[in-house]
Length: 265
Image 1: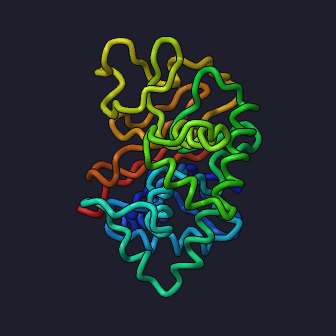
Image 2 (image 1 turned 90 degrees about the vertical axis):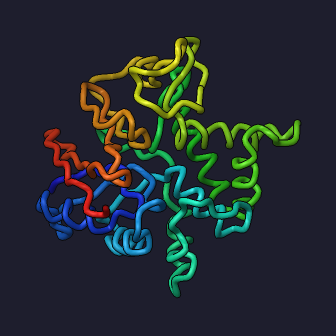
């Protein structure tokens, strides 16, 4: 049995098909791990969702910011943006089943020597704290307060004072689905999206500010401008497929890597 971790698919269905075939994925015995952002910006988010959901226990998924954006649009608390390509999902006859499946996915997954989340972990959080915060946020996403949470998350700091739990959960979503860089003091800095080596003075990659455990690999995506990073304690998989670059898969057991050129453009 092999476990293949895959970076941000973002609706790039044709490329995903080619990558899965190229690695020799056998659904009868292998598993696919997806590091978030299954949907949006690419041409066929609907087929991606149907495929991954159809794998059942053969797929593990963590939620990314584009997945949350889709849920927010479906909940009526956000409007589609100009580059969004999720209309096929929203108009599909199995829309409700797909969206319900999506909202049940975790924000952080820990299994054996691997921990997967979409974006980053603040350097001040222990792994145990990150897991506890992820479980709290997942309860909101799966419960009756989904719309309230996603509306607050989209408001970007305009929430009402006194909503301590809601503010904490929004901070958790920011870390796990948006974080790329931190200040030298370890505070989240969410605005910068360029390559880490060109970050403004005083900002560093979140994983550069964090003490990594070489015996525990953090698997993530989200940062296309950073590209593939594979070193002890870290496996960053977003290689910008939706921007015309490549979709990356890594076999967790031995670190073998495949990069499939984008077939979407």
